[in-house]
Length: 102
Image (cartoon, one colour):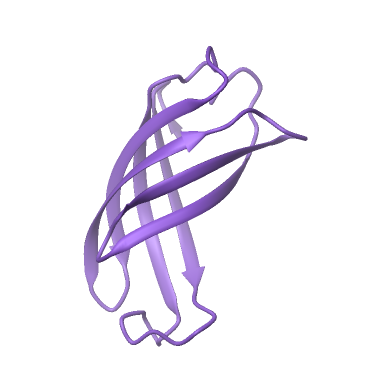
């Protein structure tokens, strides 16, 4: 969800295939992340953003991340994300593309 041109807020829920005692019910976690994108109008092929927020597992952790968002493909925008929130986090993200916006 955009909050102006540069700021995006997102939530997600994750499920672990293997049991992990640090997750809720050994499987679930959730995130509330705010990202600031440095290229909101896709003036460059690749866009960089920085973010932070909260990760909810058995305990709540602060999250800090950086992300590299790629060019649009078939109505989706791929992104590569790395950061920390109670340990290392890495993700490949697919977002719905919004015309002329990151």
